[in-house]
Image (cartoon, rainbow, N blue to C red; front, side):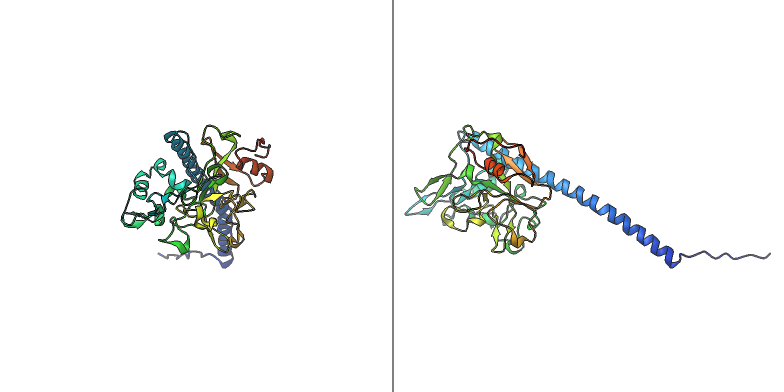
Length: 303
């Protein structure tokens, strides 16, 4: 019997190139969709964090006779110096309402040498080197595992900042320098739903650089560009300027202004506990009105 041997036909070079081209086109079509899904997930996570901050302020007020947490809180006396719980800010003061009560208690309990809050030791690590999940936005492209690249193990970062116009316009200089809220949660003149309490602020911003450290004590410490605060009037002349949407290169970022890694807008927590995504098309006047709790102006339609 004669058997005919068949030879399997191989791909030609042209056919192989066509297949590769088709695969490349499919990948090119798929990547933007994947990136959009990732950004949507990051935006939702960021919004959830902001919601926690906004509600934590409400719970803080509920536990403190409607008082709001201070922008910067420094206490002590001339002979002893700063007390253990001194050197705080809005973010540290709301820790007990972010399921971080154990951490907060270490910072407000007397320890050897009576260190201020940011240098209190918690399980072998000083407070300023701790990282808090609720303070980390996945779209903050300058942060990795809670730190900027050159601050690992030194100062933990935050992707969020409080509004100084709400939390810090009343100054107390009885000892050190504290900046407190001039209103409580129930008597904000423009209403809680019309007033920004928090916004996003990138962990690293500018060429100086400007950081956003969650334990930065502020007050008379200087270098307020490192404080988790926006709208720092009267020190920052640009306190009322618009948020920076995905500022690249980062060297051009202004550390005194709000900033975000999202491309569609910036997340803001309002004083009624709600969260709003503010578009990049908002006018400067409307943004300033939303920052200021007592200007008497209504928010325009671009809000």
